[in-house]
Length: 314
Image (cartoon, rainbow, N blue to C red; front, side, top):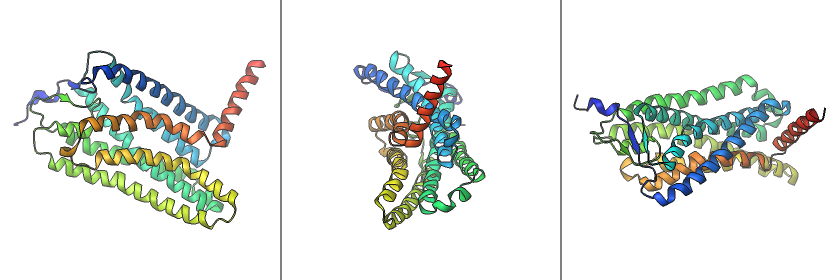
């Protein structure tokens, strides 16, 4: 009962980059451009994977889910960020903050597990190509995606209440541009050791365990590739996996640094720019990474454009 009852319903002030007013307009344009790229790139992958029958494979089923996650992940953050960057109003309602935290954590945690699932798909494609269609059947693919979403919801429904119930002693200024768990824990005026321990344990489960599975998968892929004698076979295997490996490196590198450190060593300025990277920049470049050297996606795009052109001429 020592906690203030009104502290749970008051609006939060998101400090964001207001201490650098000269930077806000530049960041507004920067964030807007990358958000548009995210919308266009990920929407294109989703529509192509649905409309083109040649892309109805496990790889593109998972890639379509990743694009959907990136689309929702960024959309849960960017509109509020653009609003705060554009004008003097920096507030977000209590319920808006709770919703943002829940959605953000569900989608981020789901993506961690989904990237591990995608590495297993690449392992089967390279190491067991003759059994690929038998192993990666539609039912298993759906089950793996369902497990990814379940892990995301489980993490969010465990950690979000723990974070939001911390006593803030009337403080409602969040030194961040979104309601992120480390920033909300850092503003608490009570002992947060137990919450940090929960966060660390779940961080290990949802970050290090999937990452370990990814590394094991790619170790086995590397061993298989080294046994391939033809240069063409090696190149094909490398192209199959390199895009996913780049995405894994970008996403996990920043997120592990953010979440597997104590809240008292958390640098807010550093945290803001790292969060900006993996919530806005990474989702916008994922479609480019997957499509620049991907003949299937480029072919599907050409077929779609030719189909539309033919329909207009008819």
